[in-house]
Every structure is written in C-alpha cells, then in structure tokens.
Length: 341
Image (cartoon, rainbow, N blue to C red; front, side, top):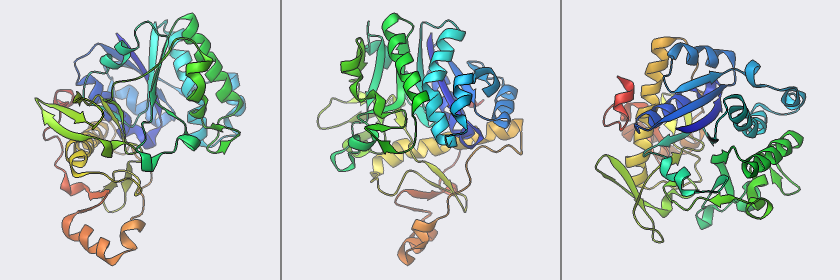
C-alpha cells in the first residue's frame, strides 16, 4: 500500500480531485489522506465518498502549536507550515509505515511506486527542482522541491520529519531570509544533516515548468515518455503544474509567462491536464452545483497589453501559455477515463 497525503482548500478543489483521479487510474494499491483547509471543501469531498481517500478537517488536524502561529502567517504560508505536520499526523494517527506528501497540483501519468521503491532502505526521499540553467532559482527557492517527499516510520525518518516540523513552526514565510524560504530551503542540507536521505534519480518524477524544456515528450502505449540529452527515455511519472491558473473569459494560463513551454509538452501534458481538470469540475458539480472549486480568475492583462497578442488569442484561442477552454474537449483520450465513469 502506498500512503499519500495532500492539503488544499476550495480554491484548489478541482486540481486536488484531478490529482486523486490520476492516482486512481494507475490501478495501484494506494490511499490518499486529504486535509481539507476549509469547511466547504471538506463537505464536498465527504459527499463524494472517494474510495481510496480519507478526508480530514482542520478541527481534526490542527494542534495548539499550529494554531499559535496561524494568525501570524498568510493562508499560503500557513499551508507551507502545515505540510510537515500533515505527514506527522498521518503516520501517527493511522499507524502508517510511511507517508508521501504530494502537492495538489501534480498529475500522475504512471504508477509512482517506482519512485518510492528507488529509496530502498533509506528513510527519506526528496526530489530536486532540476532547474533549467536559465530558470535556476536554487539560491532563493531551494535545491529541492516540496512536491513529492516521503518519510518512513523509522527512527531516522521521524528524526528528520520532526526537525522539519519544528523548524516550520518556528519560521515559514514567503520570503528569503537568513538562508530560509518557506518550508523548502530547509531541505537544502538534508543529505548532510540527516542519515538515510535519498535524492530521487528517476527523471520521470519532478518534471515541471522550470525544467520541462529539457525534455522531449511522446505518447507510446497510452503512456507519456520523456527524454533529455543526459537521460534515457523514461515514463513520465508525475508533472508539477506549478502556477496553473484559471483566467477570465473561460480560459486558462498553463504557467507563468516566464517559462517557455514547447509544443510537445503542451500537446502531451498540458492538454491532458486541462481535460482532467474539466472532468474533476463535472464530478464536483454533480455533487454540489454551486461549489467553489478554483481561485478567482486571473485577468488577461498579459494578453491585453499587446494588440498582436489580443488578435492572436481571439482568432486562435491560444497564445503562448494561455488557452481558451473551448480548445479542449473534455474526457477525450484521458488516461484515467475509468475513474470518471
């Protein structure tokens, strides 16, 4: 059994559900512990009766330690503060032998068991950002990404997890300060600070906007495969859809404008994600037609600032990292179609 946990509120509800569906599609033995960060999100998820998930409310999870720092942090900073505590909660409350935290804006394209298997007898698994050289933000954001991190319920695993949990309680803010940034820069020295820490080698785990252009993408036998100049062709295990945003006029921004997305990653990865998001939206609306499931739409300022961009976007329905919803037909060619029936 693979044990995962994640956290999100109503603004990430469609993303979190799409992530769950993608895990379900892998036909693997897993359970996902979802920490619902507002009451509406909690209510909708409970009504969905997800077969491989446990829904946990804030009242069940929040400790006096967490509550003592909650008002001093923004909503995002508080989520970062809680990440390590969600893993701690799952391991101790449900007597798990391990738990992997996953960001809600991931999507799984293959069984992630190959990633946790790679850690062998080690106690902790962390993943590098693997920044493209021109996007390298390691100095400020960290060498490693808190997107997929595993801790075993062993002495070494719990030592590292407890240290991280206490560090985040003491300081976890959306700024660079004294070598720290959020919950993430804390990981920079873990291979030296703690024994039993394994850095993921499989390139299929951790593809994201900041490194996507290093790979080529193709679909073979209903799987997405990636290849870089430095690595062999491997299956894409998960993609991190960092900074994906809902926009006004029924459109989406795939990621921030600074990142170049090649045509093949848009075709084989982002288009599939939009369809997965649409499928999740439909599931939610069946349960609660008035549910909030995404953030306030982003204005199309970057498009409207240029006449040529506006014309291109109006005529073709897409431009750079932006696309109109109508460009994507929901449910077609979904790798996880069986989870939607």
